[in-house]
Length: 364
Image 1: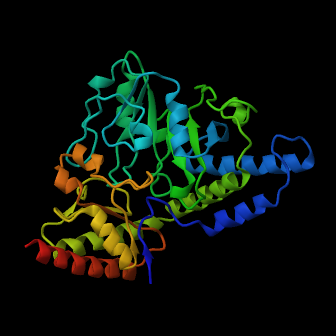
Image 2: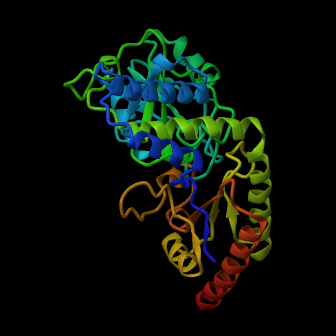
Image 3: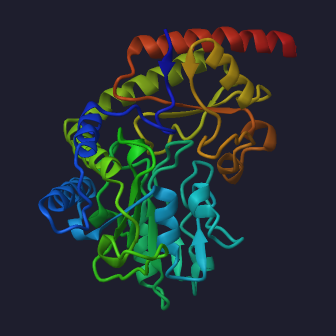
């Protein structure tokens, strides 16, 4: 029996999202049309907009649907030419920044130094890291930005935080928030940029003037409908405290692996983290090898963020935290979901331990 333990890469589609998508596929109308069929399609889009807004605590008009968080990031940074990011951002954000990065400490938390951001147009700090699960105090960064003469926009990548934590726009300090549906049980290929009221963004995709002129192109109705349904269900799960049980399973996993090998490092275990994420370093045992071996054993895990096609390399996030090249190349990420069971965790730990012992024997 296989166990899917890679929820930070993509979560399984929620039943609510699947039902909403099937209903959307039966709508023939274009939401830009004024006839009854068009109005029905438009109503479905606006319902989803309200559902996504409810997840992050903003007004529906602040939600711009995009093809995903990568496009949302590109739309946000279009407002400036100088973008400063932290050293542990996802590539979708990091690729827009200048060479100088905001530093992080050994736990992966922003070190509080914003001096390089003077004169920046946009400053980016993620809410939660996809590889380590470490949470950031984005409001602290925002308050420092507000005190700067240049007053840069604050961009917060909340892709991993929403749907797993009580993340809200009002307490994040963000001007822009990135959200992606497939990280919280929605379909792939749909996301959103949340824009603080009063900030205008210019459409980078031009043509039909959809999304109130901020992003042209006929709306992906099934994707948007699935996103909205998933957002509503995810918000309910957070409110019900369901992720607290997942955090207990994460802790069980880390304790069990640590007992198996004293060399194993649980990254960020002393920092505030997502409830479902474990980044495990076994020095000298390549992460990609572990991923392949565990795949053959029936477990889906990843090395790094696993969001770039075919990407297997030492984690830049771990290097920024002070780990050396060998350690950074020896990391795996195990990310649990609401359907993960205690049995899944213990079976994984048993299988991983057996393979780790074989590795140690060969390396001796």
